[in-house]
Length: 530
Ligand code: NAD
Image 1 (cartoon, rainbow, N blue to C red):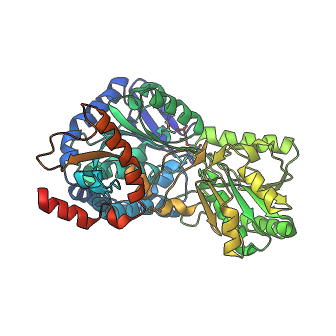
Image 2 (cartoon, rainbow, N blue to C red):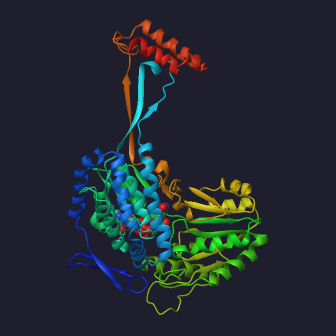
């Protein structure tokens, strides 16, 4: 049974709790005309919204944050009920991250968006010309998000896009439509956004077609599977629309023989099973130095068997249910194939007997696994932890990098310097030493993938600047009597030799920066001529 139903007659989506199949509510589905209308409405609102100062836009977002903070229990319960995760995770990995992002970047954005003077090193042009970057919004931005972190992930794109002066069409995953509509309420009602600045559409991929990925859309922020990302990237490329693609992962964890095994085993259990393993940065394969392999295995088994599986809304639940049927079936398929090929289930692997009809599966540890099994090679996105021994660090690094993905990784060592040395050899957007998974919560740091884990960057100043275009403004400051530039028509033998000799003159002057475009030269020049 699916955890959402579409009533075609009324064109509404009926959302259900994936643990109990209880109906949670319904949301009207968008038609193809509705999707086009959302883009048109975002286009119309652009002039007004982008004309506000960044501080005025930040004030709207801070109001939305306060509205959200007044309703933490209500929002956490909704996230847990529609998505299956424990409420504690709804608070720390969803609401806290969204709040941090608004708080930090409402304060940082005015500084980041200030005009930036550009240094011109050429001694002549440096005096005669002024250049600066001025940052302007891109226009209409599309934010398409997945179901696994249904609140913090879309908020990341929405907050940056809006702060930077863009207007948005937001498409949440259908499995979490009610949470998507709650975000819409927080920003539109709580943040009192002007009409049309944020437009939320609940629609299937088929209804959307190419509408959200072609002009007048000017940027696409997609978070989801590599498969769908590839499709959308293709449409975007044909239309020269820049994208941020936050895609899948198969994150390795490397435990060196000098690691604190108590810490590393607790980190592995949390990293592999938080959010029921449905994390792009989940610990999906663990490589352990052979001398400590048996001890590590004993510890992770002991800790995994103590985890409490249940309803996410119960405050004492560690592991909720999976969010939907497709993902549940994929996990069973990976597990079934691994066992058929010789993997050993060390613990878990069954459906818990908890009297609930939903998508529950026990957190599972697998050994005797090989790199041709899906559970080691492909993204499982579920509560599976394959554990593999290694003999040399080179071997561990080779296996860690032998993947089409490169999102995150972790290295565990008692010697931080050694941990970092290994971390620098891993092909991944983020590598944590002695922690895992959590760094999405550090909003000032970049969240990005290498290889097929994506392009572009979320969070961080670099990620924020992806929502603006740095336009180069260049002004001439030549004195009035200079009626032409030396490189203009008409060309002659004189202009040829003047330009030719200036090549080496400029190159030589660069050796003596004080003689070049110093502030003093500029000031003296301006005093004389301007
Ligand atoms: P998905 O690719 O199936 O869907 C993502 C979004 O795209 C959803 O809103 C979905 O409705 C929409 N979509 C699907 N097909 C579409 C189409 N043809 N046109 C327009 N929109 C379409 O992914 P999912 O199952 O929701 O999420 C799980 C995946 O997301 C995993 O692979 C996971 O690793 C990845 N993910 C990556 C990150 C990251 O930051 N790198 C974060 C979270 C999840």
